[in-house]
Image (cartoon, rainbow, N blue to C red):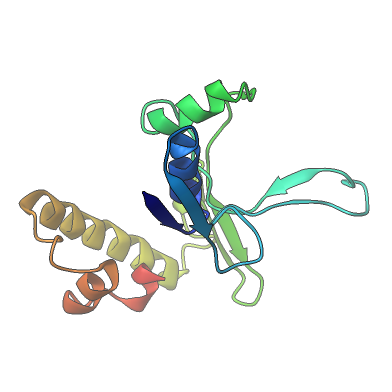
Length: 159
């Protein structure tokens, strides 16, 4: 039997890995010129951090939620360490940022930063609605984009 695997993100690569020692004829298709999907690792080429490996993609790794991924890591004998998982960004143009490491990162840089206060309120309200609709099974008929559109989620929350 021939199997086509579309995309070389973690799902596609995992599928190929688990089917590797079977009698299936597996072909992996990837439109980009690199493997890895959302992961994006590179090495700093100059400066004081030269040689440092940086991961810029969305990366989450924990044994509770990623049991199959952990099986791959362990079977390949890839060492790993505990780390502090957090998310942050900084927009140079708008001089606005966010840090998800602790509560302080959620607070506006200034009490007068009304835009950030409104954004936080909207994230709270729409996340609550999203969770309720998920529990009720109301998401199954929509793509994520369609759900946001139908429920008139603000662009600031979606982006």
